[in-house]
Image (cartoon, rainbow, N blue to C red; front, side, top):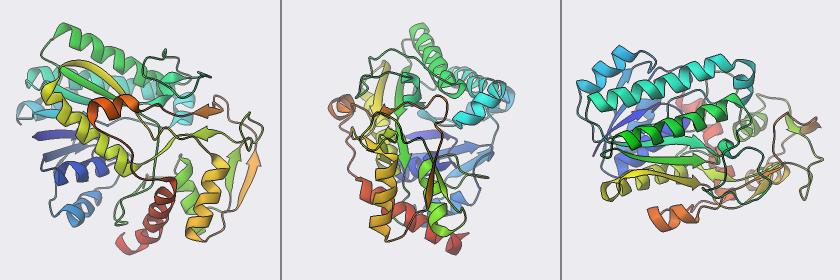
Length: 335
């Protein structure tokens, strides 16, 4: 299968590219490199032996995207491109609405013009908002808390409408929980341009001494240790879910949505202490005030993905912590 992978040089995209290549799919990547590095392509080649075709394309440029897709022949699209920092979306909502939604609209138009009928869309557990009933099921109501989450919810609705207007289109939406870790080789991991926003890479940078101390936002939640509980999923499990979703579309049609998580809730302090134990290293942290909008507990019920896609997370929390530290240590050797 020839797959267009948008945002394919990013954290999630690079690992999805590896899984696709290992599953004998042909991968073509487009990315504007706003939050990733071109060197990722060489790292993918080191792992798989194949360097994906790449083009530097901003998906908000409609004519450029249309021309690119019409000049190629794709069987499917995996759409990962988009801004993803929750805090930044709150401070600059226009940036998120303009980029994330416009790029999705342009992609839908380009797919129609290029006769591409299959798309896997990268959504997020943030669409569930402040739902106190855990675990989260796919049929829970949508109730987003920030502009980033709303862009994901809006794009899901756009894709539903597009499917309703074209019964030949197949859409699979994957609602991610909290991707962490790195490729077991240490050649790929989360490497944003600038300061990371997510917990695990910050822990890794504290371990390396790049950041002095980790901030834990609140220890007065109604959880076992007072810190927020999340469903952390290894990036390789998440990447595998994309391949399973892509291959399932050959025998299905219409719109469907799946949670992609382990179904296990892990507190912030538990993640820190597991990282310390697995890697025999001390993580300095301090407890500060809660962040606005953080929910106390969020984890998935992923039974639907297991039953319908044949997918299940196989990596545990120790694997996530070990692979993250391996990646952090290895960056100095491969940069």
